[in-house]
Amino acid sequence: MAIKSKHKKRGSTLTLMVMLVALIALVAAIILWPVDATATRSEYPSQQDDIESTTLVKAGDVAPDFTVEMLDGTKVNLSALRGKVVLVSFWATWCPPCRLELSHMQDDVINRFEGKDLVVLPISRGEERKTVESYINKMGYTFPIGLDPKQTIYRKYASNYVPRSVVVGRDGVVAYVGVGYDEQIAKEIEQAILAALEK
Image (cartoon, rainbow, N blue to C red; front, side, top):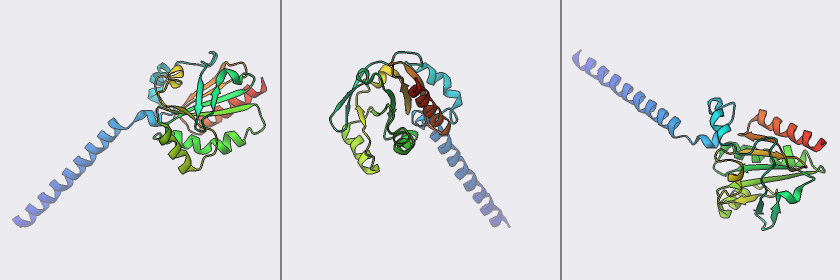
């Protein structure tokens, strides 16, 4: 009887240790998870104050001008696009919601507004050409992609969080700023584009 009791106690201790290790791993994952990569209102409502404080350009502001080099070597100047609506989308290859947004870019934005006065500028934030090019080729995307390896352009608009979408009206004034990507934000972006195109 004593032997059985000893084995039972040892088994309980082992189970408790495994559960403790799993709990520690879960807590560490929550603490160390890159929040910047998955910032959406639905998943992180408590971060709204931080998101607001890192947003340097808001609706109603004149969009800071920039010139971005595209993957194909051409350059695009924002102020030269006056008269058109522009969707600027800052993203990164390591960011899950950014990747999700890019996967919808062709069908839900580019094709959806084909023939309209809309210019779509997805701009990679803080990554080298080789990294961006490799990802774009792997995914088979053919739409233009801008490069901002030193975050020079991004820092005119924000100090943290991607994906970050900015709809700029025909007059160069920001019509919408969204952080993160989910169904609600996708609808907001679409509505902002539609409203800006009607002006």
